[in-house]
Amino acid sequence: MRFFNKQTALLLTLSITCNVAGSCPFSETVSSDAAVMPVDSIHEAHQRHYRRLTSLSDDQNTRKQIVEDIIRTQKRSVENNGCLPSNETVYGVTHETYESIRVSLDLITNSINDLGDRGHFIGGIVRIAAHDFMDFDQNAADQLGSDGCLDFSDHANRGLPDLWCDDAIACPYKALYDEIYSKSMSRADFWVAAANAVIKNASPNKSLDLPFRWGRIDSDNCPNSSGRLPKPGGCGDVEGVFINRMGLTWTDAVALMGAHTLGRGDKDFTGHDGTFVQNDEESTFFDKQYYQEVVNRGWRPDNHWTWGGSNRHTMMLNSDICLRFDIDDRSPCCTNTTKNCRNDSIQNVQCKDSSLVRPEAFAAFNEFAAGDGTDNDAFFSAYSSAWTQATENGYDSLTNILSVCEDNEGEGDVDEGEDDVDVNVDVHSDDGKEESEEYEDTQHASAPEEESSSSSAYLLQNFLVQSTIIFGTMGTSLY
Image 1: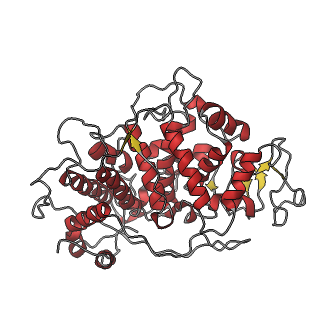
Image 2: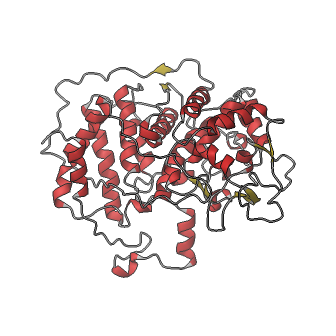
């Protein structure tokens, strides 16, 4: 069978059994004793500082096969569609190429079983693109901006080498670029296109389709980049980066900060630990919940801002809270004294709002937070506008996506008898969302999934055609 509908694909996926016992990836031997990481300082340190996609599979060989097969299958899809230069580098981004990035990242994302790691992967992709454009300075001789250049050794970029490294197993994101897209688009273009892709995939019903134009030029030298990235100190830092240097508005800044809904902070990288929304599962959705969290919770300062009990693992930074509240004088306060702030000394000390010191930011924040959790229109519209300006700063001749690939007539058929590809695809069930202590989350009510575009349907069908052998023969699964 050459094409599958959604129901068939789901049945095939669910037929995979789950019975892998993986060995410690840091062990030299493979045995049942190695299935659990030893409790010692060496292994604990390694786990802390290398939060890579270990949950893709606990077994190194299986993980390698999954990553390589997803990338290889998608590469063949692009080649068969005539979108990949065979020899020399020829830059040009078509609709098919752009859509294949989204499909590829969706496959990898859904192969990550641990929700914390999944949010880390999605949020990290957006963070790489954002750190690349947030070093733009309209007043400097070296304006920088989206140029595919970051100092990955700098403290400001800690954690990003977990996603962009030369180990294809640990960093399938970079491997995807190296193996498929490096011949047709610059690194800078790929970072923006990939961020657009994961944001669309994480938005409700894949509804947020950010604009994209290509033609960004890579740089291998950006010594001033790290010094221009924002610090979490407060709105003075937000103003310096987004308003003064990048030329954005306060509304733009508030919108871009909404990307904090994805992923989490890690104390080993940033000194702060936790999600900006209520749990790891919520950190895999791109929506307005970040704003509702700030407004509806009783946040209190404690290294960073937090709410709930000590095991809550949620956070906001000064640069988040200051957009809605006036905390410039650093006086201890609670953002919502109608809630339990869990600190008697500030329980009745209401933080002042920011309407007098940052009226535009205050108004934008309220607009994005208003209504129930399913109405993202105001946020999405503002985010799309701000993201487009931020990713195109410094360029005046970017090119729209090309309508079609070059016609490679006679080369588009897949030979199912050669180079069989084995790919494990997993459907992850929800373990049930943690109930909010203080307000009901209506953000992610179930809704019909939108129909895929013809190009994405082609890519997914091609992926399934080349991977059907796995469903009947391989008794392993991701978990």
